[in-house]
Image 1 (cartoon, helix red, strand yellow):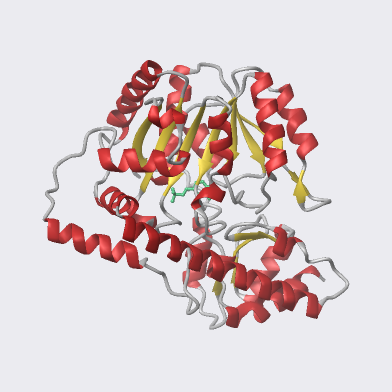
Image 2 (cartoon, rainbow, N blue to C red):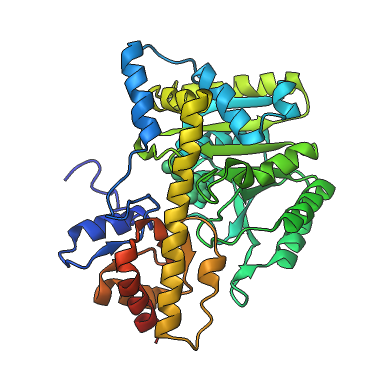
Length: 400
Ligand code: PMP
């Protein structure tokens, strides 16, 4: 016996566990639509051309491997908040944004959660129902209480705006409202511009603190501007907020763990103090962030030619996903014209929320070797045109 023999086996992660099961399958038709990672038409991982170019320049520049400061690489921090808030941002110009480079979206959310736990005692975080599988984990791990607000309407396969606004209005002032900046995961259902305005009204009149999670800027629509619409709207309206950013998807830097946590506040002094405390949190957890991904992102964002090429590549990735989305829709309509499949093409981003229940998902995996999360979400980034018909068949078969 070991002094640790009382430790119980942890449950498999609902998203990462799918990849483990996929790797173990020997079925030649197997398809991994679990984890949200971009694949080429040959279903191979893709390293962006701009990333390779930036890495070449970095090798030529012969950088050292010294520690970064706690808040990360200065050029990156400057670039990332501008990318988020836009060139004309008043908050950026007035130094009202505290930015800490952190470990991709997850680590940035975790630092933000720790900050809330420490400096907003008693504040509850409201998460959309449903939400990305790791949100609850992250806030719970930081000791921050979370609740849910209504978001997705099963009946319309769309946004339950009235339910959402009612729940925001019922939340106590000072509560934190987690908002997916674009391409809501897992539903692919985003508010329209008018709906964002109504959400901003409710946030403002109720004294709530938004916490944007921007994991797909430029990757959802192909446009950095369009995908940053919501946080930019809130900034223009003078609403203070947190925002976590990730470069996993839009730069394909999944394993480099590059992202940032920002606090957009009303005055420069508060931003400086907030930054100092976020640094202190980072210091205690991991001291300072890794440099490689930060140099890549800063090089690509700050060089006009690389920046232009990056926008093209994001357009290509988003375009490939839109193509398979349309193809899947066509195949579903052909196989079962009696069902309304229009939700497939209405949804935004890399996922489709199919409405398959856990038993039907089990059928998808056991009979058709299609690996997906139990909530009925499929990653279209892991689908090729050649596999659309196979997938449509499996979906129709599992629904019946
Ligand atoms: N938030 C959301 C909504 C996501 O979908 C993801 C990625 N699946 C993340 C955060 C974070 O991913 P990463 O830590 O790789 O940036």
